[in-house]
Image 1 (spheres, rainbow, N blue to C red):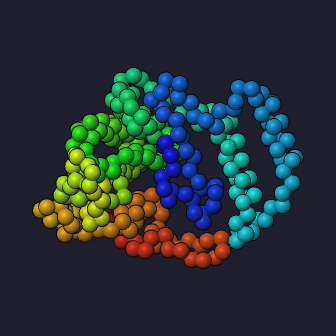
Image 2: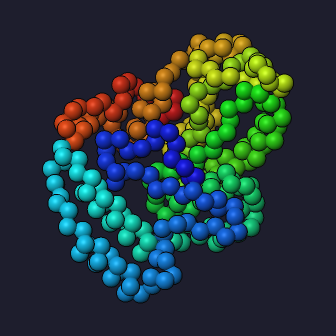
Image 3: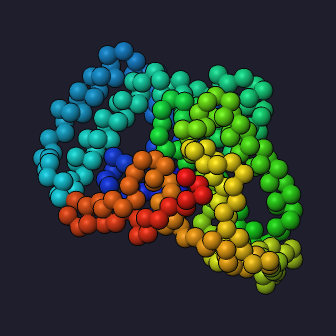
Length: 279
């Protein structure tokens, strides 16, 4: 929600692992998720008859051999998942955010990010195993202070509400909450050419990640930068260590080797070392 982030596709795992994107804003009064309910003009047997006609018309040959990577087989899986979704009363109920009490919705924040986080909690309750709430627009090369003064308080409110809500419902112990971007920002304020208000630029030497739940000890700080925040200099860790930690918490062996449809072996993670303080 609300989009698939760049490089967020299923790659060689196949189309059936592509994300289901919920693009609409759950903060809108008339929020309705496309494709999780049978269209009103196709109720009753008419919907099933349409599906039967599709099968009748579709005469394409299928190649079941995985190494073929047959897109027709992937489309079959898409159709099956789609049918399961639109005929599932549980799925429709999970997306019906209007069932939440006003005080709960207020706690998360009456904005797009807040209500998407609340919808994420409802999907966790419904058994959805992996949910991404994509909240872009933090590229503050200029006007940093005005932008964050407005944005950070509501972001803090939403993330705190999500963690507290999961905890109160007994879901936090088995749910891992991660808040992160893809790199840090320069510790030094800068002004780009033509800009009148200062900001911060891209910085790969240091960044921070917030983790809660899933057996992660609360109040734990791992690693540090130098006094000016330029580079990590204490307990220096890499993205591979973070993802290995996440995989391990999910019960996936980071040492695992996957095979592409053509049989090429691919390491799940190049460094399977977990962050021991978070386990």
